[in-house]
Figure (cartoon, rainbow, N blue to C red):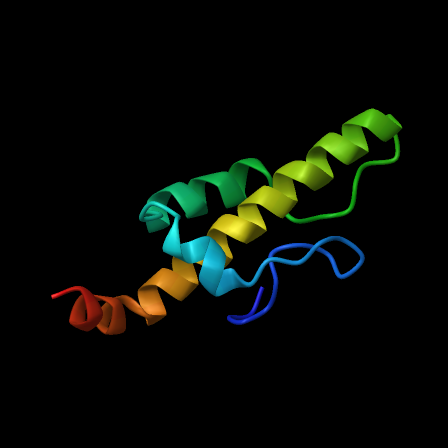
Amino acid sequence: MPIGRTCREPNQTSIAMEDVVENAPPIPLNVVEYLERIFPDRAAGKNKSRDDERFEAGCVYAVRHLRAVFEYQTKNFGKRMRENY
């Protein structure tokens, strides 16, 4: 999810990434990488139930969001430090 995009799909209520990040705790890269391995972004298997597909899609969505927050925090770390000190 590129910086500046919203954290929800367009047909839902959108929240700007900047607003989300202001309240987010620091996201460690190793946690994001771990979750990306556990919940890979791929098509659902043929033998999955609709509920399983939805669950996996939700997990992938959450991991994408954490990656976007991590990238935003990393890119804007220096700026935030200057503003706070």
